[in-house]
Image 1 (cartoon, rainbow, N blue to C red):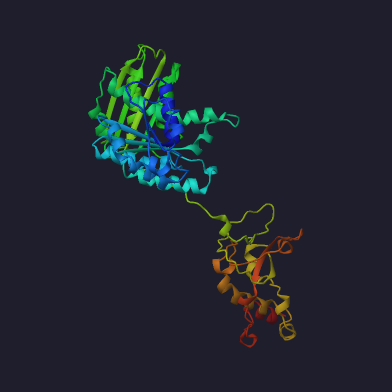
Image 2: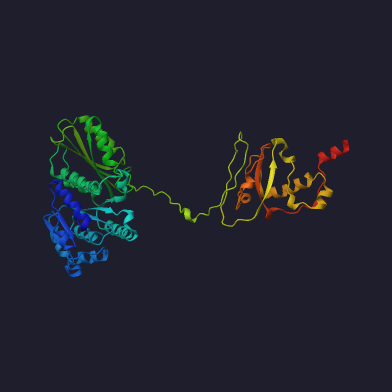
Length: 456
């Protein structure tokens, strides 16, 4: 255990009576080190810190570890496998843990890093240091297990005591170390030795490590689900794992079909060509219980969800349709939001039937001239032509769809959205800059008007 967080995890394993493991704690704070229950205690960086701690500075923790590199190396002599545990974000754990891992790996020892990431509320500086420390230790270990403290809020109640919450985090490491030590140190019906463990974990990168216990009738499913779906671990998926190590431990009452079910449930999520090793141990103390430990390596990390910065998006209301209560729009408006808001006018297009939509009068009072009204008393002809000019850009159709250009950058007030109670209406935002004055001299009298005048 390196630093305060690592030391707490070691104390938890000692209290749980974990056997077959030697415990070492390393810290820069002399007073804190002596509170540990581990047999081997190392105070590093006496010249750098004078036993006063790293003060939350990872650089000081790194210098302290380098200062006592030889002492750390001597404490690791004879080890086959080393778990380097630390809490990222502080001074000693963040700075010294990568150095300890580097020393262990350089000695040919299978090195596994198990680190915790701080809570978001602990501040930007601590979280930034934690990410830098995580990147550093990742390069120095064979296998890395990352536990995110913030994930604890997914499984605890609001009134959960602090010590209970941190115990759940420490149990991840406890179960991982106990699962591997049981595989190596306990003779099982299906035996797994250290060479098997090393073949799965050597140079494997990110790892998923979990343990679960099941009781009673559904103990198989409960144990497997706890082991492979640990919410405290980093965003990892077991699917496609290329290395899987499973230890199944049960009492004398465990049946052969239960062993088969556990094996199938775990391995079906891994890659078809994965290196899968399954051990089986009988412990008479586990009456009516099954304990499953899973170590999976060589799998893909889950894709991060895209983040949307809502603060950068302008709050502009999208144009809306006002339709009769018994009608639904046949298509939606597609818009491109912009921060420029041009002035808009209101044009009302009254709809009576689809067949008459092209013959209805379009009112545009601000653009009409006295000459226009004199020359075209009906004024539907001129206004219809005027509307057709605009519609080449707006692409207004009978299914109420717009082009993106037509609806871009509109600001709609509430008055425009009021529908007359006695008419079926649609309110259409209208942009002034799209309107061009029609050439009235070039207009021809429509055929239906010529026929009407001839008949009269």
